[in-house]
Image (cartoon, rainbow over all chains, first blue to last red; front, side, top):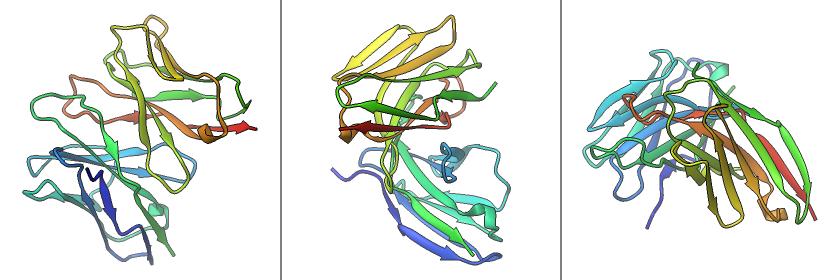
Amino acid sequence: DAGVTQSPTHLIKTRGQQVTLRCSPKSGHDTVSWYQQALGQGPQFIFQYYEEEERQRGNFPDRFSGHQFPNYSSELNVNALLLGDSALYLCASSSNRGVLNQPQHFGDGTRLSIL
Amino acid sequence: QQQVKQSPQSLIVQKGGISIINCAYENTAFDYFPWYQQFPGKGPALLIAIRPDVSEKKEGRFTISFNKSAKQFSLHIMDSQPGDSATYFCAASRRGGATNKLIFGTGTLLAVQP
């Protein structure tokens, strides 16, 4: 049973560029959340997708956007990259079919470095 | 009110000892409290979780103690092993919210010495 998979594992970009990160949820899961984890910090909630719609958003600018596909996979897009966007980006999936607070399972993340 | 405060920042324990990590929260609407374990280069892995209707939950060597009146909860690792060396995060979320988004603590780096 495959867990949450993320790609790519590492990425190097320069300021001003745009990036797309991808996530495939754990089998049977329909909800995907994205988190940003700066070095030495806890993960910070970016947004969550369910039924192909953004359900809630954390305190992140509009440069951060996402998408969920019919097969429940998801993309995180970040435009106009800043040095401060350097972080580990984590995807978490859960099964929320009518029941909230189901456990979230994380992938191993994409390490994004901005030069 | 959305914060979860975690302590200590780092912890060194001898093999076989008890590791204790503490967390405190302000938002009384939180009703789900998981602990995650993270190894370098990996994502957080769910370790154990508790809801506020119980005061303690035990799974193997890992125990969560929950004090609803004090708005505090803690993770106890019994018989700590070198393989337990990792960063531990407490988190909280609330059932009534639009999502099950997790609010994380700042993490505790645990080192278990052989």
